[in-house]
Image 1 (cartoon, rainbow, N blue to C red):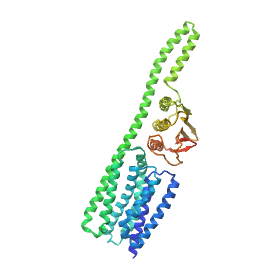
Image 2: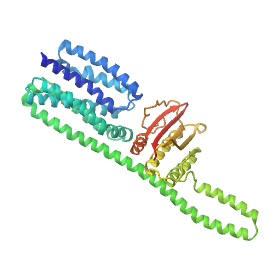
Image 3: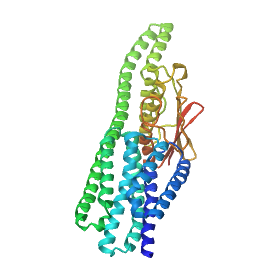
Length: 419
């Protein structure tokens, strides 16, 4: 009887940690506090109902109908509060489920071969294995996986189909018609499936991560291209200034003061059109100058308040943050009426930190609470494309990012410690 209790407790432990692993990896529409509250309340009720079914009909019976009594209801519940829809959500959901099913199958076989089938080894191995997997997922997988969901758009359908097949395959092989340990002739097939699942999941993540690295590379190349274009405009302007100087000298030598003043006004206009000087840092100035012109093309004036000098700064990360933030703002503004298009960028120091704020008007249907990210598409209603990249760049230099909506504006605040 005591061993049966250990088996039941280990199953309950696994059910709880399926939820923990999924909540760690999926992107909710709500704040972390609300998400945890919804998950604890909703899934708590669902788990109690499943325990009642298990108590009344036995856990063996529950294991056979677990897909109907737990998997489908939890899928619907989390889909309603998820920021990602369709295949991205489906892949994340199946990833958590199949990972936990894999652990349950492995610990079940270990208990059968090494623990004598008395459930003691099963209980203690699951007691350690699930928290360990969650720690490894949080430590090494969570951040890049959240960025993957926000930036990689292709491939989720095929990978989702693969995880669904693995889920069905594991359930059938391990549970039907009876538990795998009661079918020794099928154990070699089960082991091969468990090993194959590891290799396939490794290949899927390798493919997705390759797309993420490509996206990062494209972002860096875009920033570099903007800097090169700005430098070319500077060289052209220097060349033109030499010609302006000769003309001005000739007018002054001829005593044509009025003509000289008119000419200087024209020169000033050409210089302003050729290159804006927004700060002393050449890298950041190049990004600001590039986007100043991009906003002018859609009839928007970029309001700037840049309070930095020529001090040494982590320009690659800061340029990446500014470039992605301003690109997001430009995409959002293009979907708004002309009279509503407003955008501003601010950079200033405060108590050992550099504060960056990008603020733009946004759609009235967009509502983002502090601590959450909006959607990821670039169709106008969403605003999340590039935000995970900005967050990752900020974290590389010890900073952090927060975004939210306020009175019809979308605001991105970045805080970076500066020595």
